[in-house]
Length: 333
Image (cartoon, rainbow, N blue to C red; front, side, top):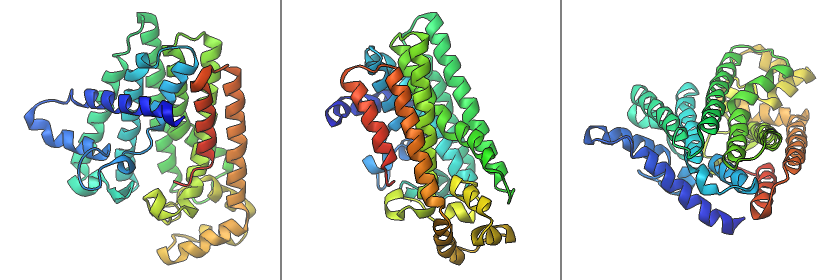
């Protein structure tokens, strides 16, 4: 997998830079810099750690190759999904009042909320431009645009539910899955479906790859929920206290509420203080929430791998997809 990524990652960065350059004109240089900063290319602390892992565009290209296609064909889709993902992060940081992203000040902290919104909106629009540049037949290009637009809608719907749930102290665990199915899994499902589409795979193979991405996205979010409470801040680049303080209805929290124990009683009593968070996180772990989240992520990853086998992935790229799924299950940041 490292050898394969040595080819994919530079091509992904070059394609994203090409799309970002469409925001041309000297008068927009700051706008370009804001987006480049968020992508980890410019500013203090720039570099691979600030750029993130590029999981989504890698999924697009690996799926295209594993489905028998030329991954170069899918590069515009790879750029589109990464720009869409980062648009959502810029806006999420505003909505969550997050001062840090990947260990650096967020865009809104440096340039203010109005300009951060503009940077996010510009990135969203450039993502739409990118997906329309796929070198496919008219029918497949329209299908790709439809897949991408549906992912955009589901992503926004998931974030809407996430914020809406913050005001509800008591929420059934069943409400969790539509939220994370939109905010995380929808885009990963689109990544794998788009990759298979670019390869010219038949509908049943596209469907299997889509399920692989969907289940992988759900597992990824469950693990993110765990890291949001018990993660190492030095590795995650964000505060481990923020999810509990902001009332996030993550899977561990909803599991804890169902236990109706000490955690649930304190949670239902009202707003937490930062000083209470470590003890409350420890109580939540004692009640089994962390173990439950880990087992749920493992089950979803197994289901993702089963769907991947139905897709009959080929060659080194197929092995890389399996390896990536297992790596995401073991991640620490």
